[in-house]
Length: 313
Ligand code: GDP
View (spheres, rainbow, N blue to C red):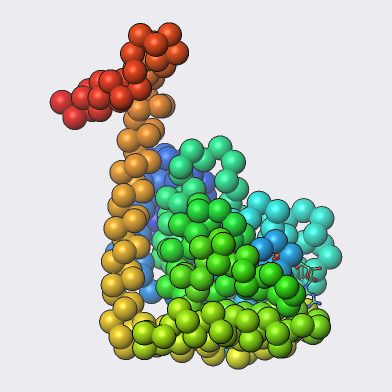
């Protein structure tokens, strides 16, 4: 086993950060270490948290993390939202809870941007989840802004997905539009200290009634006020109950299998893309074909056949 892998397995935060950087850069050393740590993964409960910007995700995640720390659990946080305060910067300084989290050895926070990651974000997130899991985190929280398909794909990695909404007209409709309804295991109406909360809860519950009518588990709708630390213990309990439900109903294995399938596809996709677009000799051929396509000398389908033909021969 290589050095970095054994240090990650011992929970060394600097090695965790280093391995994440290595895999983000598709380094062979990173791939080797991933192979070594793999047998030690699968223990962490992966929780996806999604919702529109400003719904209080970061505040809620801080509170939830504090609750897990009180229970003696170690937590990894992956923030996909590039504007998340977890990415550091000025906002972090305003938030006492987050300051505490950032200095707590039992918490590892990593933010990941979508920039410059040609189709590679999902694969990189899978890797980071595995690394945090192997480093001994009991819970890994993945935070995304639930707007695009990419975020919805990322959140599929989670064992338990929480959709956050806030009181006010149109939020639940927004959730359906984003294709989020089908991925929610728990709804949270945050900012329950604001007016209109009962109506929002009723709206979501009526949607849940329709969509869950032929399922054996009804998606619960909780209320929290993250800012006032209210409803957090109940949320942690509900998350635990969902995991127990998954395990009892054998859905846990089925869901994990889907995750591993997606992970394998992502690794193959990433390697193929790197091979075609980064490898020096091949890149020239690709550039040439693009020139020919622009001049209408070749059509893109024939060009794709030619590239794939070279790989598969
Ligand atoms: P994110 O963009 O979803 O991560 O949202 P943030 O956690 O950054 O919160 C956005 C704003 O909403 C901040 O000003 C928070 O202080 C505020 N906020 C978060 N939770 C609550 C809450 O429960 N009640 C109220 N009134 N404000 C909240």
